[in-house]
Amino acid sequence: MFRVLVTDDVDQEGLALLAAEPLLQVDEVPTLPKEELLARIGDYDAIVGRSATRISAELLKAGTKLKVVGRAGVGVDNVAIDTATSLGIAVINAPAGNTVAVAELFFGATIGLLRQIPRAQAVMEDGRWDRNTFLGRELKGKTLGIVGLGRIGSEVATRAHAFGMTVIAYDPYIADERFTQLRVRRAPSLDALLAETNILTLHVPLTDETKGMIGKRELARLPSRSVVVNMARGGIIDEAALLTALEGDQLRGAVLDVFAVEPLAPDAPLRTVPNLLLTPHLGANTVEAQRNVSRDVCLAVRDALLRNDLSKSINVAGGAGEWGELQPAMLVVRRAAAVARAVLADQGMRAVRRVALRVSPDLAHGTGALLAAAAAGVMEGVVEIDRLNLINARALAEARGLELSVGESHELGARTVEVALAGGMQQLAVTGTAPDGGTPRLTQIGSFHIDVNPRQTLLILTNHDVPGVIGRVGTLLGERHVNIAEYHQARLAQGGDALAAVSVDGEVSEDTRKALLDLPDVVTASVVHFRSE
Image 1 (cartoon, helix red, strand yellow):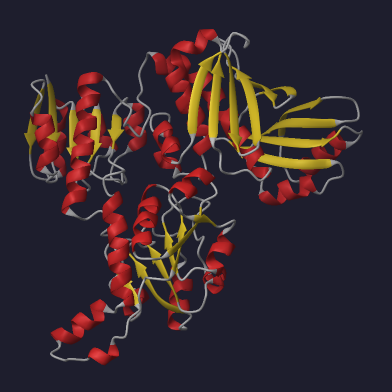
Image 2 (cartoon, rainbow, N blue to C red; image 1 turned 90 degrees about the horizontal axis):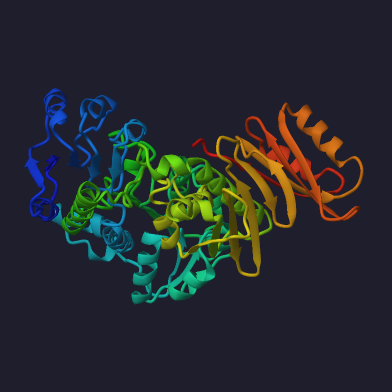
């Protein structure tokens, strides 16, 4: 018998799924004070709640029987995930339940802005009849520019066609086939999308790549009197630059449902702009969305407790067994995939279409976990890093249209793996090995045989096989205080093409990468910063 504590008014439809299981005892309580929750949590195997209850490190440590934390929603800011992972507690959320809610809010709010509905309502409440003041605009015939064609972006695109809009999108990580399926024209760059967009909407995670991606420069590239909408994450738009563009009449208007700092301060300048429609992070705030997230999370908690199915967990479950045994091999696979992705991206191919993993027979029992590691390596830098792990990587990759495959190969040596990425006409395979008790190594990149430990940061250089290249590279890195741990040079033939795999301490800046490219006989330079495992 497993005991489940449910709090924060989680929707009843999800709770019914838990209560229907004879092996689950469900106790539903209102949001509890911290001390009372601490006193009770030790009796439970799982806790399910929303954002009101903070699942702190202290609470997790007090829950000595806890196996699962269920969050009925997307965000997990109220959960101490690192502590949960170290304690072997699975953390489960419901990322897909709000998709339709956000897509519908986009159209509702955008139409509200274009037809000036909030202002018209205020006039009517004031007892006036001011019809001629509110001359609106239609969606039909407008060009909708979507940044991020993932789950929510795809739903927005589908609905936009019904309004007679032209839909273009920028997402370098989505394959051409997905654009075709959605009848969306691919923009080759963000600048190209901005240049022809009447209504810009953002549906990307907040990462180092997307933080501040829409600033003064980008807003200036939009056609005059465009509209900007952000229902993704605060911080993607430079709010000060947006305020200036609105006050200067450069934009027709904007809609914000998310903000860099939430809740938005009562005296925030954004509150005073007449052509800016603000909502208090309502994206998932519908009855249906709350029902969906309740169902999704309760089903996942049920399966985790009764079937040991952790496929919906957003963190890696601790403990012994397959995960512990495969850790070195999973590390090699993940880093091999990251190297292949980085090299291909620098060659102009960002939209990976296929991920093919081959493993030696002695690793064949762990193909599921190893394929998840490959997917995680490909997805790093594409999705929010705190929501990417070896459990959810496959689902995230497949949702973006990646084809994942894995097979056993007797051609590979003991505890050896090969990760091959492909997209369009380009492909690259990276091979590595994880010997028992030894140090994980990358052993081949494309046709080049190497031997290097993928630690911290790896530089992959291609160059002409001529004297002096190694010295010039080493000198430049030394001058920039980049310490070399390993330097492995490989070539296919004397005087032909060569490749260097350089393991270094710390990080390598973009300026340093560009300086390497300026060196004589260096052809390409890729930098891979590995995430700590």
